[in-house]
Amino acid sequence: MPFPVSVRHVRAPLAFAALLLAGVALAQDASHPTSPATPATAWHADVSGMANATDNAGRRAHLRERLDAAGMPAQSQSFKHGERVGENLIANVSGDAAQPLLLIGAHSDRVSEGRGATDNASGSAVALALAERFREKPLQHHRVQVAFWDLEEEGLRGAAAYIADKREKPALYVNFDVFGWGDSLWMMTPDDSHPLVASSRDAAQAHGLQITAGKQYPPTDHLAFLKAEWPAVSYSLVGADEIPSILAVFEGRKPDSMPKVMRVIHSPEDTADHVDADAAAKGIDAVEAAIRAWDARG
Image 1 (cartoon, rainbow, N blue to C red):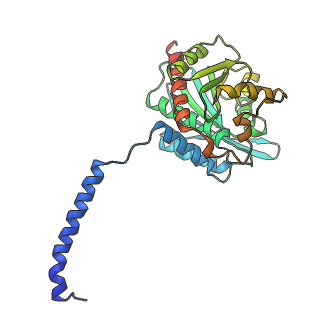
Image 2: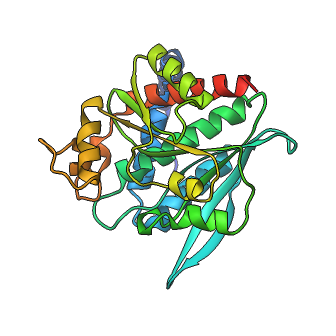
Image 3: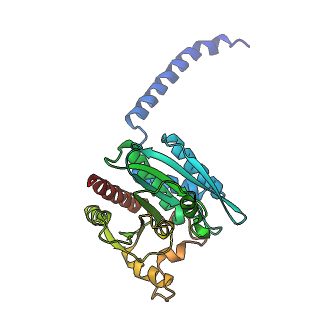
């Protein structure tokens, strides 16, 4: 339908004004660009992405999508445990085939209660963040792979399946489990003279963190490697004041007060609301620095 003459005469000036306003808006947007993701927000987005998944397959789907986007497509390793079928995800990160293997990893599965944010979307997000960093800037002396284990909550089954399949034995496996808040890196190591322990102490101090290193530690995937006599360590990030109480619980003793981690994991409280992205980002920086210092020693 043709416009009346009176409307037609005012339409062109209004359109021109609209274009001018749009140009101003674009200029304002350009002068205030969207802030890029920080290490803390990126880590929290991965924790939330896994926690929001309806099941363990959805958690793996989030990891697979992120690995694909980072140029590290995941290989699937299926395995059986009784009537259950599990699936590990393993991806090449960086390095030459002739270099010794550094394997980093975390379990991606959760129990039915809660959303599995602290246990263990937090550790999976750390392993993913480190993989991206080692992809962007490879280590000098080690090839890197990243693994996400399934059915850890049913007895470390995914890590055990990797070993039983006679996959490549790493020069070192570095595990992450419960890396959600606090001021202290908690490092499990069967050998406190290992060079990574010294570099972890230095890195923790440089990043304003405390560190506890030793053999005592709640069970997680590194134990499957140690049982096979494969070298392995594991990191958590918790409050330094929680560690004695956590050990008391796992030793069957009643602590003076229940530590936060024991109140959160395996409960409806295990949601992304309880994690501290800024603390986790500091912990990731410290672990990256420790691994790079260890690697630089050759």
